[in-house]
Length: 119
Image (cartoon, rainbow, N blue to C red; front, side, top):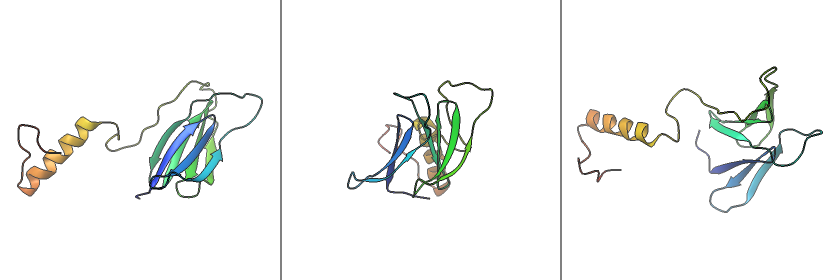
């Protein structure tokens, strides 16, 4: 699913920003309670959902509306910062993306120049 939203995780919340206008489309508070202040939020967007982790809990939000679909307390795992991943190519892996593009080009019969001029 392609979306025109940019997702920002901060202070125990997820905010969806329209990439064209900069307007806030939705904002979802993940966790309240006795603790407050700056809380790091890890995010992963996949398959129409936004997965967020903060302060020891994992949350699943609808990508377009921010509605909370479910939450998991990750019992017994503590409150550290978490990394989120799913199967496939990590969005931060430019080398993996370049490798995939090369394979796709080779399959199509066109190769990128060795000088690195291709994107």
